[in-house]
Length: 300
Image 1 (cartoon, rainbow, N blue to C red):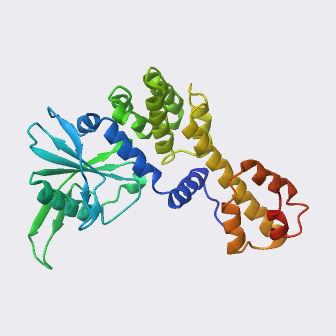
Image 2 (cartoon, one colour):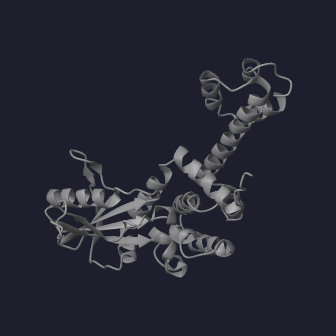
Image 3 (tube, rainbow, N blue to C red):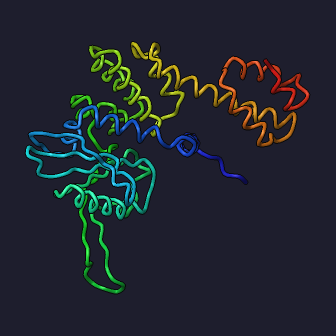
């Protein structure tokens, strides 16, 4: 007998599929948050400095770019390197060490590395805060590298709600239950109410985007619709529209498969190229009368 999948497992599988299809928004969001107020991120690591500035993270001659790099102190006394991680990656400690060494060589300063885990799924057993390399069968490692780990889901939600704006959008991912989430969203909305509209919208969208790492899209939309100013946000409308388009295309592929057979690559590409949500909805209505994929794609 086929075992039933629990609702929680189904929600997790949907989030995983969504992440695979669209992996980059979380990266862009966290980098924007850090640039918005780097001192707030420094405070999150438990450190303080008279001056904190974002510096060039490019080390592309060897391995690309680090997530974000801060220069601490005036005159500069050290570098802080932050890596944001939402997916499991067994190679993360080694890569973090490589980046640390390259940044130290480039800037000629000590480098402190911090891995920010955005959700539990990224928390692999080898993320211990220590990375070691040793020769085969050797008792002592010839290299020991230490790094800091911040597990966002373990952070007290009050620390983020009352902290700086640069880390405010992390609050829904902190140590909070789904039942407490509406209150958290209300608190975030209150914090950003008096900000200039552009900054307010950016912060609300950052929270909206990051919530996708943990919660169902339906729940997120339900909560965010009640936030003042969110419905008027151009960015929010774009994101919601994209979600509706994807759902419509998915429904068309499923229903069309029953009537016309599995869609070929040319049909899939044609569907992906249709951005008019009203046309996609007209196609859904007409699918019962269309004679083929080609006929359905002629829907005006």
